[in-house]
Image (cartoon, rainbow, N blue to C red; front, side, top):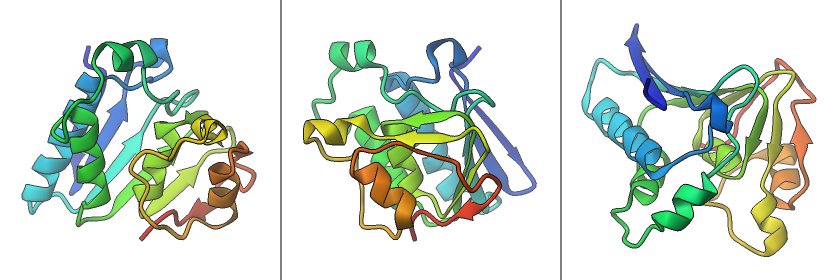
Amino acid sequence: MSDILTDTSAGVLTITLNRVDKKNSITAAMYASMADALAQAQADPAVRAVVFQGHETIFSAGNDIGDFLNAKPSTMDSPVFRFLRGISTFPKPVLAAVCGPAVGIGTTLLFHCDLVYAGDNAAFSMPFVNLGLCAHGLRPCRGGAAAGRALSGRSCAGDGAGQPHRAAV
């Protein structure tokens, strides 16, 4: 079974992180699949929006560190950079449905979404900022208090469960 599932229905492309056994940690192959899916959706006039989702217990644990160390991005055409360019410049609405932890890139990809729906078990964390590292491909955003907490390295939970949050425009 694929680590990235895609389904297009009623004008919406749903991209599902499907590597639950590894807490949906993202590999280079997964970045490539998501970048390709975004490029196809951008070119397809029948696709009017994109939704990212994980599993009900985990959105994403972030990068698969083992995969990342074995296949470090070396050029701007590497899968992670293709994905970050694709999501940050995507011209159609991008939404995310988050349940469970969203760590590292699992959180920063949300800043590129137009709307993020956080379930009552959602939790957001960007541990790399505590190491003095920059968020992955983060563009200026209006993320509110949750963004401020996450960018300061503090975790935040889906306190306002069921409340939509506009992450970036």
